[in-house]
Length: 154
Image (cartoon, rainbow, N blue to C red; front, side, top):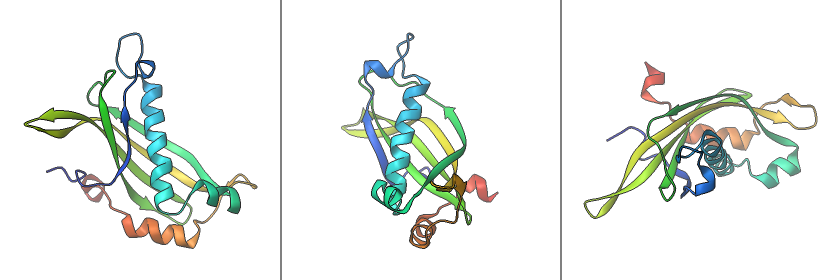
């Protein structure tokens, strides 16, 4: 069993032909979009909802992203995105997404790793366009679900 197998699902969908490039597989822009959708769901889950960000003048600013591609996805493939928050400091956080293709096997569905992405973000003061401390409740909720990867602990 993989250490991320039980991470919550924050995204799911199906690959459409317009997600694909001239070689017939899902293109980089589509992977970024799928991970971005899971990002907003993940952060909403710890209190950084769209309503909160608009009302409180707070947001997220991407500082770094690292993508790795393992298996191709094609039109009609269904997938899930499992995510976890890896680390948090006063003004930044790092989180990880794993996109799995859903495949039928032995009368059930199995998840085959297709791509991973790790992001570093800053909590943003939207008016000042500068990093700011996380709202206390968001920090507490993020810390409660924070789970480093084994490779980060080594």
